[in-house]
Length: 321
Image (cartoon, rainbow, N blue to C red; front, side, top):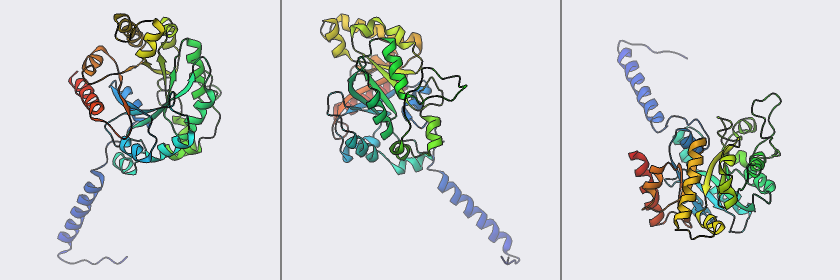
């Protein structure tokens, strides 16, 4: 390349350098610091903060896009009561892919982590639905009616790949088979990187999958400390309605609230994030009590005014702590 010089080349070069610097600043300005975790819910929990989300039964592309850009950390697809359909799950996850957010972050991390709660209870075993869900791209599973530590361990094993020989984290033994082609597309990473991240946090500090056990039976309440001690359990979520039914009392009874406190105490003792759903009026006290996974309710077609108010109230309370 021929270089042209003159007495005025100094100012020209200085102007060009300044222009390049300004261009570089403009290009880099929208990018935030790259996140540590691909799962934004885990990114939040690992910082010791509160993760907010909603449940969902609307699997449309429009709703997926609305939720992907909402002020949430997670959304769980409720397949316990809605028909399980892995084709609609795949479509919903594709709708949650937000390239603009990836460009802003400089990372394939989505804005909102997709989780699912499936129909089988823990006592029935749910290995096959766990495999199907994770292979579509889910970043976490919420397990229904976990009553014993052995059930929790079985759930953890279903989410893990078998670990390499000599690994310090071989147990609980992984049972998941390999075939996550759709997950690679949603996560935006190649297979070797996916295998590094597709393990359970906090058992693996670098893991980006989360296993959440629902405590909603008298049996689960009785065994809550043993369940919390199972390696790979990433959080609890309390189901007050089913829990009160199991106890034979009303959801708004003092006994139900005492049971909720028992679960929260076990979570705090074992450093396991504890979750529950709450409205705007209850969010501040749940945050103050120590809940770190908080749901604003069920959505269909984006956030409703009451659910948006609940999330806002929770975030304000968490920021004020």
